[in-house]
Image (cartoon, rainbow, N blue to C red; front, side, top):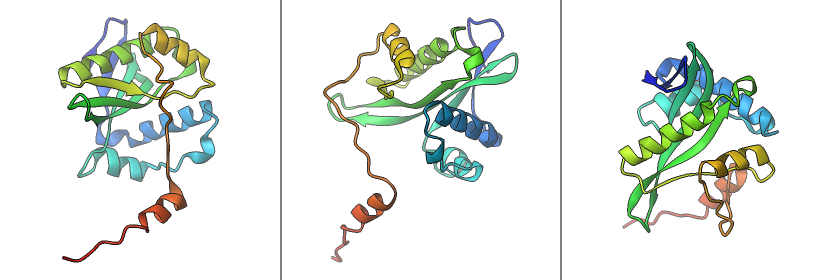
Length: 171
């Protein structure tokens, strides 16, 4: 448990038995972002990818009086320009009834502290353009929008098609 300055609020890293809770937050976030039909995550895939032999990401929960009210999922990336790892925040979500209490800010500042402790050169994340409340919140933390960058994605069948272009050569 990680104590915070907010009364009754503690942070903790997710453990293998938390797959159900992680999935609940993912589904709640997807509903908020109007993307519920895109959720393919299951408790099994969460167990395997977050708590399996190779953990691809980490999760922290914000708990108020022992109840999980927020989560953040993050992982390390790497910047060639600064030649250091970075911390990439994939998702952060606070249940609506707990917003406005400083929990999101506390989670973001903890992640920034973690990035500094881990000698990261950057702390980055993405936000949907229509999500003005979140964009305003991030701006209040000092975050800058990276308007000159465009996020690109290849997934599903297109990912498999692209991967099919690579033909390994024997030595």
